[in-house]
Length: 258
Image: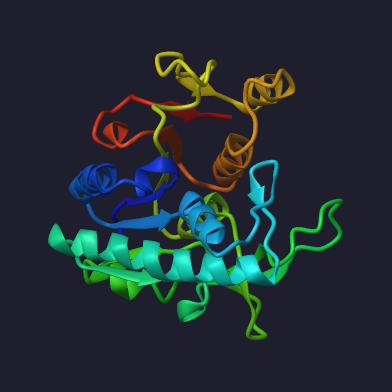
């Protein structure tokens, strides 16, 4: 494979509304092949949990996943959201295939232990096996990856979608030039979360640490950026955080650098 690979992670409110999802899938479909789509769906999982009377607990942007919540995220991530995205891409003549980290032994993980917080059935990635995806990509198939992993012992685990995207990007970067894009409802990382014009165009680790300490960057943006910087440190050539429009507009969003 001598082509460049683009891995796009989509999350946030983009997935919730049929119109915003349609717009995103149009822009994603226009990206040159080969490409991979990783999706979240946390808001949808929260909505479904509420309908089922299951309380959602979050710590620093990460979901606490007990037995009941694990059932919810498997249903929502691996089922409703994944297949909705796949069907949307098929409607745009993109031959997509929905998978989780358990399929094709793509991503093995272990249950997080030793933390100050008991996250429940949250998985930390151990192994990423992308060789099984290469024949699919060569055929023009677009993998659509749900943020679920497995432990090799029959247990599914909830793993942060940003981590999934970063882990895939790092592993693929050993084979070909790989770019990683995080796409959500905001145009990039913002100085003021209420002002979409306050995009930080460039962010390195030093600036990130400063903004985090000041409380400017917080909650779900923290793991997203941690995963982005980890990707750059491990061979990924480019990491960009942007919105749907930014997929087709070079130079938009926030570019991460060392």
